[in-house]
Amino acid sequence: MNSSLTCPHASHTCLCTRINRRRLKASCVANTNREQQSSKIAAKVKGITEVSGGKSRHFGLGRNSAEDLPVREQTDASTSKNISDLLKGLILPVGFPDSVTPDYLAYQLWAVPSHITGWMGSSLITSSLLAAVGLKAGAGTAAAGAASIRWITKDGIGALGRLLVSAGRGGTVFDEDPKRWRLIAEGFTTSGRALEIATAVFPQQFVLLAGLGNFTKAVGKGMGNPCFRIIQTHFAKNNNVGDVAAKEQVWEVVAQLIGLSLSIALLNGIDATGDPTNAVWAWAAIQTVHVALRYKSLSVIQLPTLNQKRSCALVNAHLQGQQLPDVKKGNHEEAMLAGPTSSTPSVQFGCSASRVFSGSDATQRLLSLAELYSEERYILVWKGCKGQVLLQTAACPTDSLRALWQVSAAGCLQGPKRFVLGIFW
Image 1 (cartoon, one colour):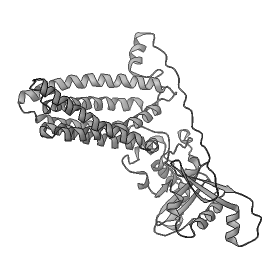
Image 2: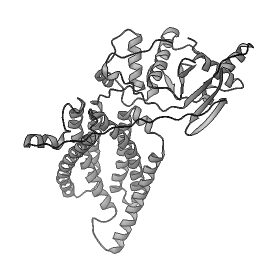
Image 3: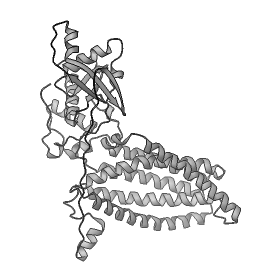
Image 4: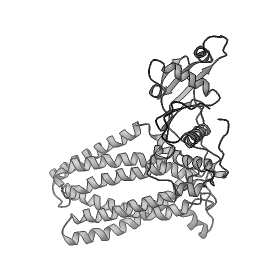
């Protein structure tokens, strides 16, 4: 396949498809023997090394190679000099709107009410937790000591959740689809809050409910924070990440103050009813609105990079002779909660050689395909109706897009039902 796909939109020229990869490296030498065809192929591609998670597996001969990591630059922010600029500079990045992407303000206008409802829900939860451990009635040293032990236990269980996420290697999937994982993180956070506020109904199960709730929230926070940083970086059009992050704190603090003020009135109303379980129903209503606002705030973000879902839409439009979607349309039509393999064509990137090739002739077939794809930095294999792509160490995002284009083109030519072992172009 000698043709490559280029998007006419300037914002799509940087093909930042971020896919968690198992990488391959092929060592090629000149063929000097005139033996059987299989021996010729084996002589040209003498070996392949599969590298994954710091470990390697050799198919023949091969050596590992290192990767270069990109360096991110930062710029300094300036101060405002008059009242108008001071007010503008208080909540907006310097140089707004030219210093951020066009969707920045729309996101903030939806995110602020989302923050407000989030703080209102947190206040209700805090009140319920304190009532559950007996602090509402107030009393002696023994009660306070028991409450402290329960609270420390709850926080300790939550720390395990942060450790679980931090010790994982999910950062690359966050890079690929931050909006999806930010919404998934919101689901974890909502589940954790539900467990915590349930202590108002089952105070005798405080340690279990509050501990599991804090654990689940910690998992959500571990997912949500990296995704939020990616979104912040997206907003920093002029590499002004620090300024954008600082102004984000202003937006959040304003929302926090409004949310806490409304929470005081709400808690007074609940106390007047004499039934603390009413806080559960109030929280459920507020959290529903909160999640809806969070979804809306994420839906207005227009990421100019190509993940697997947006790449599939781009490639399909190209092969069908349709107008290529721009950044706005590509993000709008993307199914936010759908996984990368749910798109058409169905492609799995980062497959391991040991998983794709099995049997006594696995090495022979792998080296044969490596010779066939000697001018590419990937190997494509078909199993059933799904394409499986093995990427070389030197593969770049454009190679992933070329493989995706080839899978889509093969599907158009051969049909989705046909079983193909390999594509020989």
